Image (cartoon, rainbow, N blue to C red; front, top):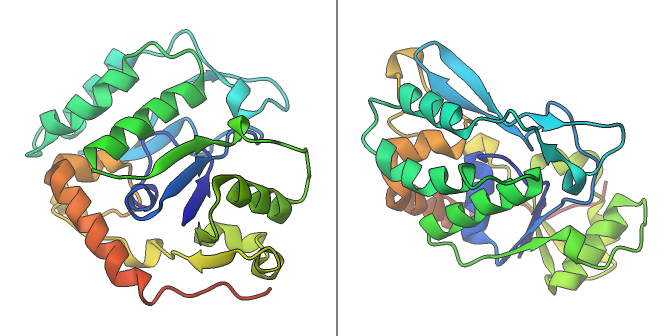
Length: 244
């Protein structure tokens, strides 16, 4: 089973579950960079509520994700200080940062390189056996049809099941994929987002934050157990794709 997503920065738990549950995760870096998306920023929880941690990038019109350069003024030390302050009271802060600090501080010049490094470290920390692939390393005939491009990615990865996020319902045509022998499985993660002892509990539980939040709360091993249990329980009843 394959999961396809633009390479995210410090991703949410839905992406991390895919790392654990899917045999292939394809990072779609051959699409246009989206400003104010999830490729160079994500949310954490602080004493003042949700806030963004952002990697500044240099931008030009029409650039692809793989062409997006990290701005020279990016300060990893400042970002790590922000994470330390936000999660100073959590039991697994140091354990979390042992995994995240090396890729953040590696001096990457390109956003995709940073995100791939982060995701690779996450996969190892979670004990994931998935194969990570960049779409820029796959044959690209230049088709503008999104469903056809997904078919090509699945075929290149030799996968016949697509673990599809709810956001893809807007454009993904399961019938078109089925014609090529590919089954769509909707993961619907937001509705079953796991709960845990989050930092700053007086603010209430906030779902959808960066993996940093959960890793600091329960540790990498605890997070892996939680996500694997969630995936296993849901996978047996996950809805199959239907034609639009």
